[in-house]
Image 1 (cartoon, rainbow, N blue to C red):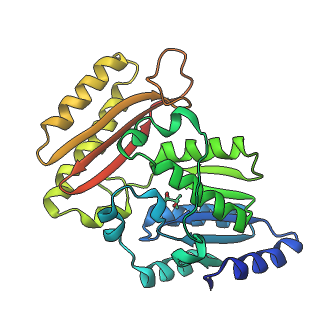
Image 2: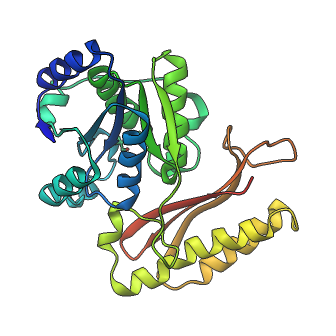
Length: 278
Ligand code: PAF
């Protein structure tokens, strides 16, 4: 695997590959790779000739400096995992390679920015679109692979792609779960053994809602879910919503796709999870 740290090295390398007709699959990450990320690499491997993974802990998408500081960065272990998964190129730039100075960025993505996660993490999706735009501009991928776990992020990036008419196809890959149901996340390393047990209420509740979807109305399902999560010690619920999979507004009979989304603080760690109901 090639390991590159500058934009110039990466774009020169990819330009040469592209000129031979090779297609480029891109997996943007912030590192601390787990099985969920590896499935994205594997999918890119199946669908594209060259697989590029970026590891960049993007400062502009963190609204809490402490969260940025404590974000795990196990680069040696990440490199090993990427090599095993058959990744061709790692792009691992320093912050000053991605950000020249005091840059201004604002992309009008409408309501999607302020709903759900956006309400709890103001500015987060501006930071995400800012860095993903930069990364797409360097890599110029044919396809980019994102996890369903960050469902709203996928919708936001998709909106950016539509608005700016970027020539990339986005692929959403299913959530990977531990055997007990916990959604894999780089933040899970921060959970204490007790938190780890309490965190299971999130996937368990999503599964219950999925099992009962269609048999009970959305309002009742949400009420039951909120009650179950609030009953769990050590868990502080930010939101549990059952939404239209496209608009992210509360779902109704016309919603072609329906998703249940949850976010909660478990101990000191904020977790998100979701399940597609229809
Ligand atoms: O999902 C992530 O890890 C990040 O938000 C992303 C897409 C790599 C942008 O920094």
